[in-house]
Image (tube, rainbow, N blue to C red; front, top):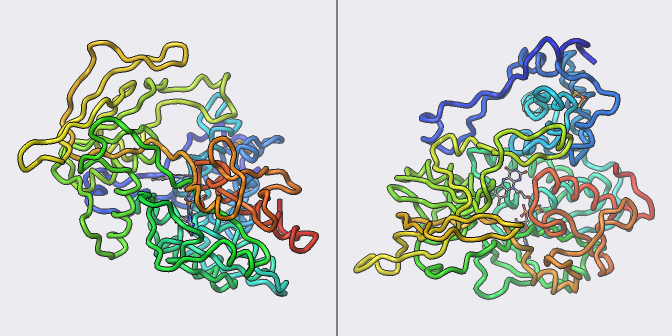
Length: 492
Ligand SMILES: Cc1cc2nc3c(=O)[nH]c(=O)nc-3n(C[C@H](O)[C@H](O)[C@H](O)COP(=O)(O)OP(=O)(O)OC[C@H]3O[C@@H](n4cnc5c(N)ncnc54)[C@H](O)[C@@H]3O)c2cc1C
Ligand code: SF4
């Protein structure tokens, strides 16, 4: 523990943001990481708790008190080694994790938590700049081969762990670039894509083979899920060619809103809108880009994806941006004695909200209304109604209907399940929500009902977080290593 009284002496230090007028002009990251002195002050607040709740609150169980202490002592290289021992991609989580570790921090009981995420961010950025993040190819090859289907954080973490254990790993991705939602979904202003490219180069040097544009199994007809595959490979072919398969295809099926007018032009899934901007930022041409410029935009869904639509619409130059949430507005502050160390429900205002957005709570959409004349077929307005929650049931408030101008409507109401066809092609059993069924037990976990077939990430747990996907990828890799070798050298 660097400074025994630090938690009484210092306030929490926040990372800086570029001012709104500057940052909305482009799609670059705008968070200003901690300077060395600030990081030291931040780590001085850590109490090195005997029972570090931060560590169990973190899905990858980062050894937070240890790296805090090392940063306090300016031993950044060892701080990096501690961080790297539990998290394959801290530069992703250091940027976009909501930081459940901070909610669990013991200081959060009656004070502001240690800014763990900002310390993680500082350590990993320094490690990359100093050249400490290097490929770690295996010394011995096992001669076993593993196919990873899907290149999001779950697939990438699994692939890296398996390659380091000496297996021959091939990652199959239906889209044209590696990264899953990190690449096509999460906006560049939250995480620039060069972070993924650096990791791909590291993993290639560790022996991982990446095959983009390859759809494993099939996509249902008329699916609106992004699929830029130019090749297809059948489940049977994969099973014959590899000793084990990890399905990490995410939970890509967006939740729809089948109200009158849903088919109008201008009403789209968030996941039709956001990836287009990622592509354009990568230098690609996109035919018929969905643009928000000069439009009244309504984003339906109050979560992270909705917030990313808000930030992107403001960068396009929307006339107005309104975000709808069905649930009532949560309290501004949580009642800590009741919720700590768990993730609290409270009003969360993202950096995108700060850039300009009307937030409406307890509101439902009844209808999308089209234009007339040459605007026929194009959404022009939205009919909403206020709702109340009575005994867990949603009830419309009589007489509260309202018509709002809406020229672009983005549906960001979450994801219902993985695309079922890939699971069906492998014969993998599903749970009641349509996710692939597998437990997370230390022994025998992540295995499906089909021999050789494992599953990890959103495809197993349903829509979740990057940090959970990394955890599942790591743990599935361990389970596969054990399955292939009879024992495993990979960490829990
Ligand atoms: C807009 C948006 C913003 C988000 N923001 C955050 C955030 O700020 N912080 C956070 O922690 N989480 C965030 N999330 C959630 C997070 O991105 C996901 O939980 C995480 O990416 C899941 O990882 P995964 O590897 O399981 O799947 P995914 O990232 O979904 O990757 C799955 C990959 O599999 C590929 N695939 C699927 N089927 C096939 C097939 N048959 N053949 C070949 N390839 C296939 C897909 O193309 C995709 O690339 C966000 C999600 C969205 C949609
Ligand atoms: S819970 Fe908070 S104060 Fe305690 S060890 Fe973890 S980061 Fe430090």
